Amino acid sequence: MSGVTTSLRFPGQLNADLRKLAVNMVPFPRLHFFMSSFAPLTARGSQQYQALTVPELTQQMFDARNMMTACDPRRGRYLTVAGIFRGRMSTKEVDEQMLAMQQKNSNYFVDWIPHNCKVAVCDIPPRGLKMASTFIGNNTAIQEIFRRVGEQFTLMFRRKAFLHWYTGEGMDEMEFTEAESNLNDLVSEYQQYQEATSDLDLGAEDEEEEGPSSPVTTKSQSPVEVQLETVNETSNGTEE
Image (cartoon, rainbow, N blue to C red; front, side, top):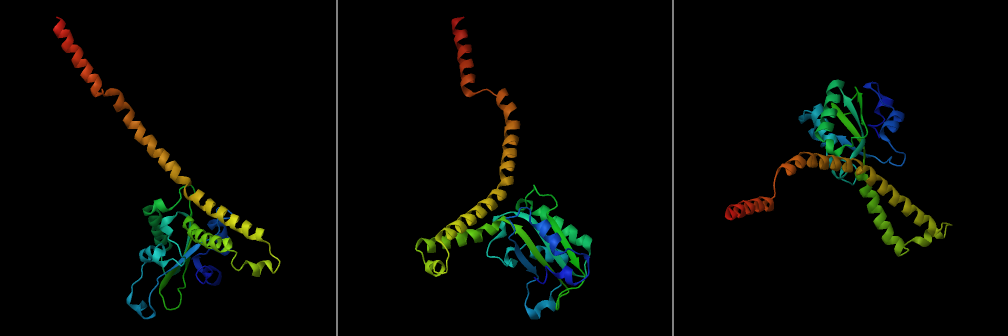
């Protein structure tokens, strides 16, 4: 929360308020669940022995071990990404590193949302560090959490465990069934947008494979045809 609200509290070179972040990070109204990370994650007494750079901060931002969410971002794709950098650094270097990271890991980013990386730079670093960065990502791998919660809920709801505490306060069982259905729809929607580009890529690969192979098959003869030709030649020779 401190990193996200940095641009509201301190001046910077590229400020991004919460409204801009919300507009850029939420491509679809239902897909508004983010995963966050912070870099560097170091012990309190070891900061002075580490020389931090912008490439290292960018690398740690996307590292799964720095994520503060119980899911692996490598199992999904990033719809949108935002990075808030704090400290004395060049905005050009930050943009170059973010672009290089996106191009290097293009398989983990959807290609049907252009310019889906938002960057903000604040000149004032956090206390005790020379530079730091906060990462916010809208990744389809967040569906793992919802799927896990849905499976646990199904097991408990099937046995009606603790259900009487809620029905005693006026709730109905249909409300729980409806909530479970909404959660399953959310998981399906995340999965749909994760696989949106996979079908296109597979179709392009199939067309590329069919293209060069088609003229080759028309020119070549099968072994059966070659064998028939040799038989006809030998038979004609014997008749003569």
